[in-house]
Length: 371
Figure 1 (cartoon, rainbow, N blue to C red):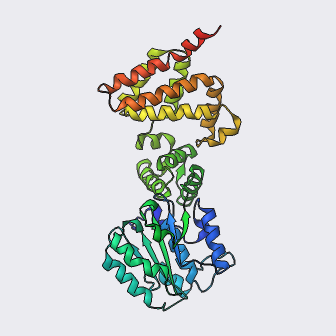
Figure 2 (cartoon, one colour):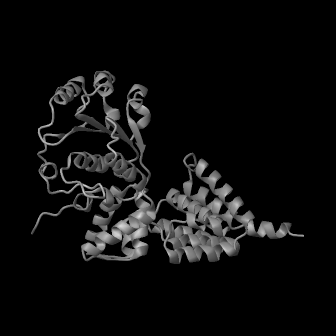
């Protein structure tokens, strides 16, 4: 049996064009390389799993590549690229500031900066989680960052830009990374599933992408988990079962019962949700998201804000037609108040049930007010 390699490592991009969801940043960097307008210090900012370290490595490899393609991509076959891919390049040095954050660690980097590159034009220093450096380490790093030798380029990456000293920020070219869109994650997962001969329903991949919350690495980890659980046949049912996600149908039924003023049916539905092991707070958050989606569907121009599969989008559009704007605004306001007071409530089940009773009475009250 061969060693298993997780998808996040196996399908890690090796060139700029393989990077998912950061087209503006990769285009800017490729143009800078083509025109030889490279800054001596870059700062990559963004949440986890959006490609900061990946792009830093591709940039470092591309800068020193001997055979750049016409599209400004590394060849992955020259001496410089090969040594980097095999993990023994002396020109590209990585430092994890989370565990190497002292003055001595930075002094070691400064000593390395003085040495000219053995192969290629530049010596590149990638410092990950740079916000973890101590104040003394930052101060020791300042002078080198301000006046580095021509052969040195620094690429800093962080998830917490606000923790970095303004004096460091002013010396860097700053790139803010976007959270990866759901449709981009779904497209990437479909591509991997095809390469691995895995059957995958698009609706199931949408749930994985939504659960990842904009982080591609998280999506790939969840994908691997579901593949193991479902024996390489990823279905919508297997995903919601494994990830403990409530089916869309529950929320459609809640609104349907509320519009028909069926208080008992909503209470029984909530009881079923609890019996399946779901948390009441999770149910409230999902219901608020559902009502928000219905509100979005009230206007055709805003339907594109929905990040759901096409068949679910059709359901939203149908239910939105039967739901008044007044009902949605009152319901959202009610759920907001319920969430605010949820933690302080001693009887949380009763707290949610009272909200469902109020929700199921909105339509009746609105009809009473009609002349």
